[in-house]
Length: 120
Image (tube, rainbow, N blue to C red):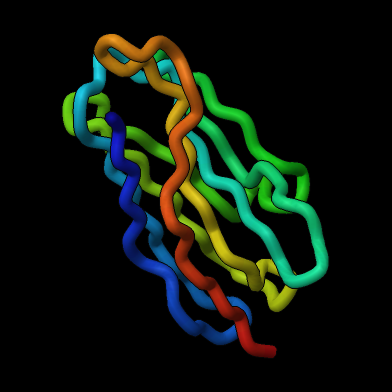
């Protein structure tokens, strides 16, 4: 099995910064990509940013230029640095790992989520 654990998040004023960290562990053969998604109340879950094992990244238009995703491959860890935060960034942020687990094949694994609240 693969476990995904997030840390970071919290309450910050508009214009501030937060750093989210996510670590995948367990019976991992290979990680294809890792990413951050978010879900605000009454809205669908949406992609924030993702990074593939080769380093290529993808960002939602709403966060380009403000958020940066990075990865430590050796540690199966991904970081989301969030700057210039806006109230509309308020949501529960989920980490996702697209991974091949030993004996289980490829699947998406999700963390429990961490709350990010940006006050105006």
